[in-house]
Image (tube, rainbow, N blue to C red; front, side, top):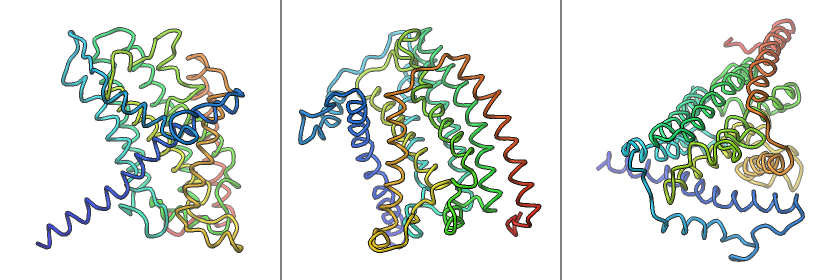
Length: 333
C-alpha cells in the first residue's frame, strides 16, 4: 500500500507539471501569432473565442481529425516513433526546471547535465523522421537540422561553463540562489547574447529555420507527416522553445527571484516571476521571427564555429582568470 501511495503521488506531480506545460504551449502559439500580427500591423488570431484564444484549440482539433498518411515506402515503425520521441524528450526535460525553492519535480545535483543530455537526444527524433520517410528532401532537412543542433550545442555547453564557474554547482536551484545579489546577465552579458542566439538555432527558430526552409526543402523533415503526427513535432518544437526560455531565465535572469524587493513586487509568488521571465524571453523569440530575415546555411555554420565557439572559449578563460585572481572561485572548485 505504501508503494502504491508513492507511485500515485509521483504520477500526480508529473501531471501537475505536464498539463500546465501543454496548456502553455497552446497559449504561447496564440501569443506568437499575435506578436507577428502586431509587428506586421494586422490583427492576428481574433475570431475563434475571445481575442482568438481558442484558435490553437481549433487547429489542434483539425490535426486530430485529419487523416494520418504514411508513405508506402517509409519505414513505418521509425516513421511513427519519430514524433513520439521528439515530443517525449521535449516534455521530460522540464522535470528539473525549478519554479521556486520548493516547486520542482526533481531536484537532482546534475540538473544542467540532465537538460544538456535530453536536448542532445532531441536530434534523434528529427533524424528518424527524415530518414524513415524514404524521401530525399525530408532526409536533407533532417541532416541540416542535426548539423545545426550539434554545432550550437557546443556553444551552449561552453556558455554554461561560465555560469558553473561562478556557482560551483550543476544544480539549477543552486544556480538561482547564487544570483541573489546580482543576476548573471550583468557580468556575463555577452554570454547571454550568444546563449539566446544559440537557442534560436538549437530550436530551429528564424532566422535559423533552415531545416524547413520553404524555398529549398518544402517543410524539411516534416514534409511527409500529416495529422496528429505532424502536430506532435510542432508540440515538441514549442515545448523546446519554452524550455530554452526557462533555462535562460535560470542561468542569467535569477530564475524565480524578484528583480525588486519592494512592495508590492515582493508579494508576487516566485513562480509568477519565473513565468514572467520566460514570457519576456519568448517575446524576443517572436519578435525576431517577425523582423529578422533568414540566414543562408553557410552563414549559419560559420557563425557557430568561427564566431561563437572561439569567443565562448575566450570568455571562459577570461571568467576563470578573473575569479581566480580576485579569489572569488567557489570553494568546491
